[in-house]
Image (cartoon, rainbow, N blue to C red; front, side):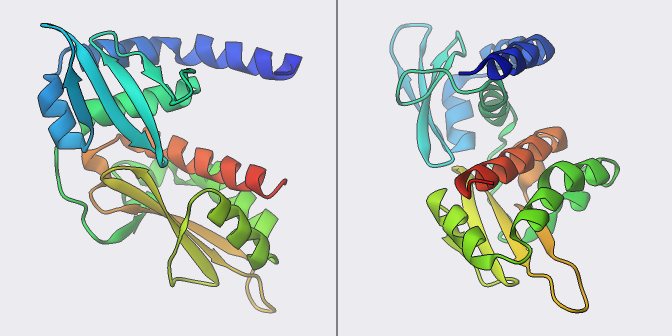
Length: 216
């Protein structure tokens, strides 16, 4: 990790540390068996008062110790503070609502209209700039991240972010009349699993991972 990466990591921990601590406390207030059942995670009771969740995030199994609420990747390392918060919030907020089987835009999430300009700036537009004339590059990057092909637009993919919540990315290539456009879509039941601010983070993570996979 370079010096700048270390600085950014420390800044993120300082900024988001309180949110992580609150999420850990909130998870301790939930019944773990119920949280697992409602979120699609599994829970193994290890002692009279503690145990361990197993939850897939982006296809990779993560373990969450209870009641400590510490999050680990399969390698044993902690994921980024953003991913830790997303995983804990998912376990806390999941209410078991079935996936809606319909896609909605970020603007249709609760309060999403107010966040939408920032969401476009940080998530959608960087993808449109990078792949607006390069469907092949977009397809390779999406497949490298485990995306599953959909039939929308010039190219589109589904990503299984959590067991019961998926996100789609739709690319429309630029042509003589219209500029390139990327739409990031969410399941209609998304608000039953994460608050809108967290879905904004998911969109930004997805955008940055696609750009990284393409070497952009």
